[in-house]
Amino acid sequence: MAKIEILELNQAHIPLLVEIDERSHLSPWSQKIFESSFNARSHNFYMQKDCEILGYYFAEFVVGDMTLENICIAPEHQGKGLAKKLMTHLIEHAKSLNTENMFLEVRESNNKAISLYESYQFEVTGKRKEYYSVPNSTARETALLMKRSFV
Image (cartoon, one colour):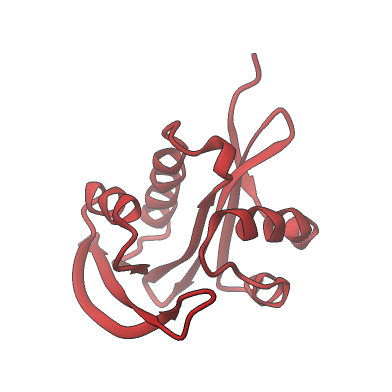
C-alpha cells in the first residue's frame, strides 16, 4: 500500500494544479496566478499517493510572517482528512522557519474551511467586504481575515 507523501511543488505541476483548482474552487486561480506564485518567498507543497496529486498549498514567507494563499484538495479526495494533513505540514513548516504569524483569507460562506482553520488556532481578525466575486453573478462575497500567532 503506497503512503501519502508531501513534496515541494514546481512549475511543471501547474497544468495539473489548474485542473484541480477549477474543479475545487468557486473562483479558481488562473494559470498566470499559479505561475506568479513561484518566487523566492514561495513555500508550495503538494500531497501525492501513487503518483496522483491529492491536494496542495501555496504559502508565502516574508519577514517572519507566512500567508496561506491557496489550499486545495481534489474533489474526489475530500472528506478523508487530507486537508488536516496539509495544514499540519504547513504549520510544522512555518514553525521550522520561525514564523511569528500566519495569515489567510477565506470566503465568509466557506464553513468547512473556517472550521478547519479554527481547529488550527486561527482567529478572525477582520473582514474585507465584497472581496470575492461570485461566478455568474454581480454579487460579491465578504472575506474573513484570519490569523494565527506562533509567539
